[in-house]
Length: 79
Image (cartoon, rainbow, N blue to C red; front, side):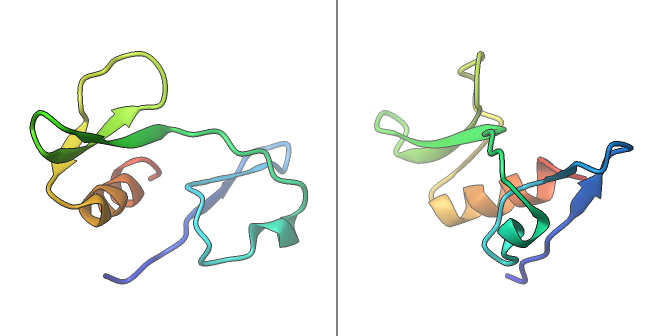
C-alpha cells in the first residue's frame, strides 16, 4: 500500500488533512488534531469498524484487519 498525503489550505491559510506521520506536520506550525473517525474492534462480529468520531454508532466500513480500516479511512475521509 502506497501512502499519500493530501493537505488542503483554506482562505485563511489553515491546513486541513488526514493526519499521517508520512510528513512532519509540525513543520507547518502548531497542530490542532480532531478525529474524524474512530476505529474499534467489535467483539460480536469479530471485525474492526470505522465509526464517526461522534454521534452515530453505525459502521462506515468494516474489515477483519485494522490496517484495511486505516486504508479505507485514508481513501475516504479526505478528498
